Length: 243
Length: 249
Image 1 (spheres, rainbow over the protein chains, first blue to last red):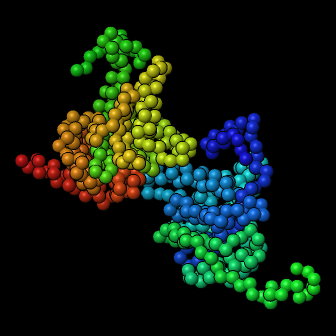
Image 2 (image 1 turned 180 degrees about the vertical axis):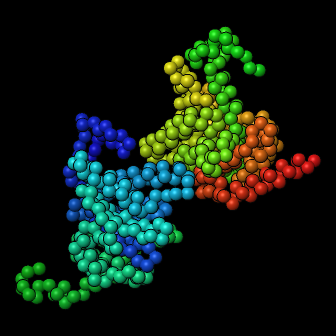
Image 3 (image 1 turned 120 degrees about the vertical axis):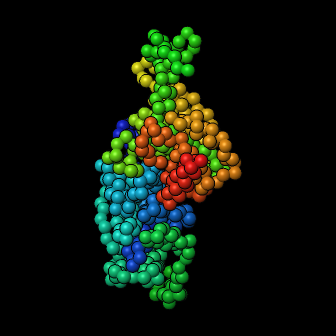
C-alpha cells in the first residue's frame, strides 16, 4: 500500500507517491482468546482469504512476543507482518537493556494501542483486530485492539465473526477456574460453530497457550464435523425441480 | 614514547612532519587511562570482561554498565570516556537494526565492525569534530562462528582471538597469550578472564573495582548477555583464590 518508508522513529512522511490503506487484500478471520486457570489460551485458524477465495491455508496468525505475551491477529495479513516487525524491534531494544526486566502483556498492549490509533488518525490504518494475551508475575492479561484504536481488556475476547458467534457461547460457559482441557473444549466448541457458519474459516486450527512458564503453540489440527443432517441428504425435498 | 606535538597537535586535521596525527594519539591516551577491558575468543564463543573502577562508594553496584548489547548476537565492551562510548554503542545499535530491516538477517559481526570503525574514523577527518576517546571490543556470534573485533579511536579495526585495552593491557595480553584459547570453553573462559582482571588490577593506585562480564556462546543460545550470576560469583571466587595463592609465594 505504502511506497514511502515510514519508520516508527521517524515523523516525516513523503506525500509524493504515498498511498493509504484503502482496502484489505489477504485477510485472516476470527481469533479467539480466553483466560483459564494457569494462563491464557488463543485460538485461530490457518486461513488467508483473498476476497472470496481461500487462497492460503497455512497462515500462522498467532505469534509469541517476547517472553510474556502472545499476539493473534485477524484482518490484513501483510499489516500483521508489519506489526510483528515493529514488535520485534521493541522487544530487541527491551532485551538489550539486559537489566532483568522485560515488557509484559500490559505494556505490549498499550504499545499496540498507540500504534493502531496513531495510524488511524493519519487515515492509514493497519487493517487488523489484534488479540494480546499473556502472563507476567502470575497476573493473567487478555486484551484486544481494533484497527480504529478501540482497546479493552476482558476474560474472553473474539474478533471478526467470533464476536457474533463465539462470544455468546463464551459468556454462558466461561468460568474463572477452567482447567486446560475444559478451556480447550470450550474453544473447540466455538471454533466448530465458526467453521460451520463463517465462510472464510478453514478446518485447520492452532491453539496457543501462555502460562508463567512460557509459550506453547500447538501444531495445527482439524476438528471433526458432522454434515449428515437430513435436510442435507435430500436437499430438493421441499422444492421439486430445484438443485 | 610520548612526545609533545608542539604546534602540530592543535587540530585533528593536521599532520606532523613525521606523519603522525597527534590528536588521535592523544585520544588513544584517554583509552589507556581507563580500567582494563579484556576479550577472548573461546572454542564456543566470546567472553568479555571489564575492570570497572569505582570512583565513589555511593555508586550502586551494577550501574554504569560498560558492556552493552548491540543486537541479539553481539555486544560491545567500552574503555575510555564513557559518554563517547555510549555514542558508539548507540550508532552500532542503529546500524544493526537498519541492516536487519533491509536484509532480513542479523548483521554479520564483520560488517558491524566495519561500520563502527568507519564511524569512529569519520570523526577523525573533520576539524569541527573530535576523535572518540574510547576503544571498543566488539564480540559477536554469527553464521561464521564467534568473532572478536577491536576498534581503536583512530578507526582501525582488527579481528582478534584475544585483546586487551586500558591500564593493565600489557600485563593482560601476556596472560591471555598463556591461555590455550582453542581448547577453552566459555565457561572456563569466564573464570580465566576474571583471574586476569583481578591479577592486573593495581591495588595501590586504584582502590575498589567492580567486575563486569558478558558472553555470547552456544550455552547462552548465541545471545549476548551478562554472565549468569552464579557463574560470575564462581569466577570471582576463583580469581580471589588465585590472587591469594600468588601473594602467598
